Length: 445
Image (cartoon, rainbow, N blue to C red; front, side, top):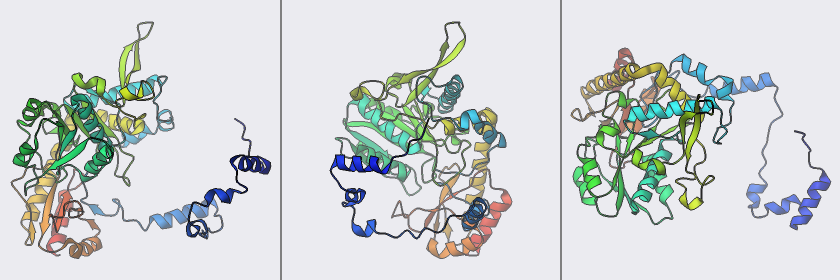
């Protein structure tokens, strides 16, 4: 393709056509204090100088490479086999534009099909889509599905669901006739069944729970699906895919829709993304699933072939009948998750989950022995838990930072009632000696 730059005459002709004399006239709506900012851009650097400059800037960052991190809250540090990057780095995958047209290659379609199959098996549900942007998007799309399926106007959501997910849900439903109503949690972090039950009504389309929830607690959901189904509502369950190596699946809980963040499946924590949203549901809801489904069939010669089976989005069908306006999926991240799950296998997924349980329970018990710190030992957890300090965390963090430790996530920013409470996470990447070191530094605070 040839590049034809615009000439001065081209620009003058366009400005005359739209009725202005100079390009600056188009910017008059912007305050002058913003238009007249001096950028003070330095002289250009050579490639070698630029690389050195970036290294210098990067050295200022505190990263997981040089700090002991106990961060969680939806983005987790897990061991990633080297083969994952080797597979996803192949040029036919890595350089491909996110495929969403019907003419996507057989290799891409097969990768999506395998990803869907693994997520369906992992969640214990009938069908999974090709993925969404992230866990928050998946959860909001699940709520829309429930609203359309039931023709009702209200979604219930536990306050123990990730606060970012709840905010995205509210943004999705802003300026619509639909509403979101939250129900609370008990001191240990599990949802309050009485508060949930009193909010059930005939206008509820579905209820959203998360297990393990944002506060680290594993929810007891026995009978919840029956309560909802008797009211004609759907159960939406947000999950951690690694936790399903040892915990009940959404299918076993009677969930209608399972969503989650796929970041733990071979994708490193990286400034908030890109990540990959998981979405699985029952066969009865398949026609309402947002996004795309890749299927397997036979070609004219009877050979196995892959195809896009369902694309219920506005570019393919009438807009008013579209399940979603999402027109793509996180193909590369989904491939990464697919490679990770394939390399780990069923036993590997179970072993990783068991290691997470072991590390978190060990650390929780050790912190419980420290004076000035409180944890709820009777609450079932997976790989993170709440720690309450008798002293403000901002007084303790400088000491921990000096020891190059990221202690966790302060919860008061999301839950004002949880003052001086930290969400602490321990995955399989932490050795016993590292856990003991954290406890020792805490004891000296």
